[in-house]
Image (cartoon, rainbow, N blue to C red; front, side):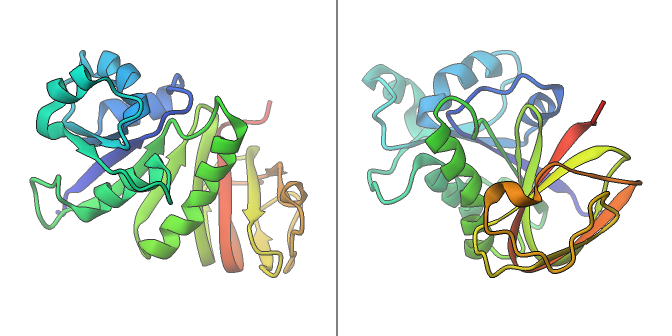
Length: 223
């Protein structure tokens, strides 16, 4: 049976507090930590000793930290992309891997909260990552639910009254659904709010989209 390696990319938004992202971090096989998240991660990791590297432009680390990290510190000075993009590029490079031939599952944590512009930018990066790494298994976990991106037709496991929200970055993208309380029939959202806060009817739902879609699913049902 092929092994799955779980890789966490830890950004510098709000550090996780919900059990789902905390478990993902605790059980990670490897963590790629953005430099401005390192202080909080090092406190957490003192209990678990998860293998990791720290990456970024270095403006959030002291020289003492860099020296202490040694070869676990990777400096990338270019400014065209943020540290989350740099961390994902390193995670995808496979340079950290100790086992070959395994399936990789990437989970982004700490990408929301604090500054709202960073939050919006980080969520939209999911579409960029899907374009840059087609077929990669990537999701973003927050303290309230999980984001993923896809195009085409896909069925998702769910539960009754799970809340789902659908976002498109291209107003030409049409979305259809089965299994949601308010069905979509080749709906083309032109505003981010227009396909949010839908409700799952049973234990699965299906979406079909002719362009990239960002999907958010809650951990808990609506009360």
